[in-house]
Length: 454
Image (cartoon, rainbow, N blue to C red; front, side, top):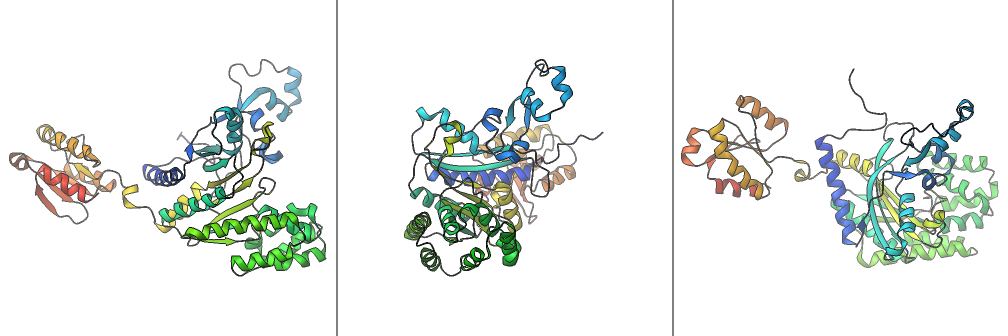
């Protein structure tokens, strides 16, 4: 029987790994420019850390790990016969695989509070696991790439995150639109239309405007028990257009009686005005229908959309006021973003935007004509590697056709041939696999030529 892998997981080929590493390395290098430092946390956390942090649905989607050794020894026959899955899981499992990087990060901050320098700027790129139903674009094991600043209320952190997003996508050569909103504005809107307690319903509905259109959004609002009068008041807000400045003016007028709402407007205005000082390459747009995971965020929220590829949001994030409160340590505010690595991978594929050098492997292959020839080639290959040129010597002296098809299959752009004549002259024949052109060169010339092609 052929082996298989669990549903919702993937193998990554060498080419895919090269592309993923290009994505990871690009984002890492941009974070470093802003003083962010990398941490890692264990794949497993105690269930005590994980349970109850993601709501009931999240608890169900946690992969639980059976206790090691005889995991049944403390469970009575009676408990087993009752077949209560949740109760048994609690007795048989003390650990689970992490569901995201945020809860482990909160745990990390609480555990290491004494040695942390605040504000603490961290990034983390690791796999997370969800026992979800696998479907296209949704996996049970996938990577998250998060960056957060905790221990600072300053809106300059939000501004820096906008710069980071802008720089990352500029380096990828992908045009994006950065959408921004503020949770306080949404709260203010719900207050002003007289439906303050329906804030979640309202935002969940208007967040779908792009997908289902205005009429369906209004129907959903009616279903949620929001009065016709309130829905009427919402229309100009949902359909607001114009420049960021025009939108801010209209919304300040609408929210003039909501203290919370006006605070949100002020925060957005500060971020947009500060960004203007240095200018972003990509457009930043105030979008009042942007809601994101509402129970989580308390201030600015962001989402990044690719302009040239149809795909959901490729980066998102926002400000939260009480990251560590879930572990009994209140008052640590933070703001963070998460890059959607899998979606960015798809966008770069669709646009064929990977630089050749990021994806290409070996640059030069020495064909193996036998023992004496290989002994001549090995020192030259060693020297090329010292110069940073990715070089292979074919290990077996098999038919040349086989070695050439190896070079083609691996898209190796140059092949070096050394036979009796070349050895007598102390030279190498360099073949360009794209043009078919061949040149007899000295080892020094070979190094120079290969460096020019890097």
